[in-house]
Length: 71
Image (cartoon, rainbow, N blue to C red; front, side, top):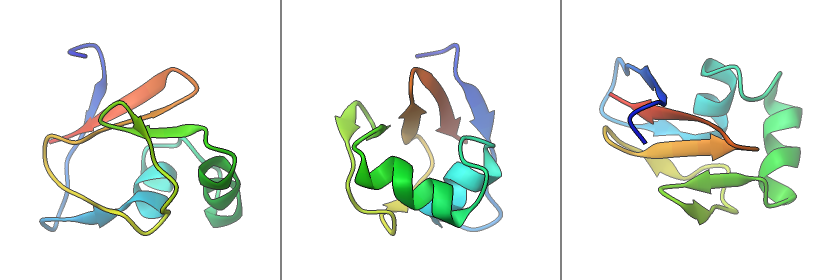
């Protein structure tokens, strides 16, 4: 997992949908919603179905094999 790009946060948490856009894993909110609804997003290795899930430092988010780690 060390090959994932790291994304720093301004706050302690960020919502999954926001992170997908910030990390360029989704083009916009509609795209982020579609990715989550279709089961294409994993958080820490598990498929995540909640676009509003709160993420924290250390969490890893993957979409179609491309991922980021929150720093």
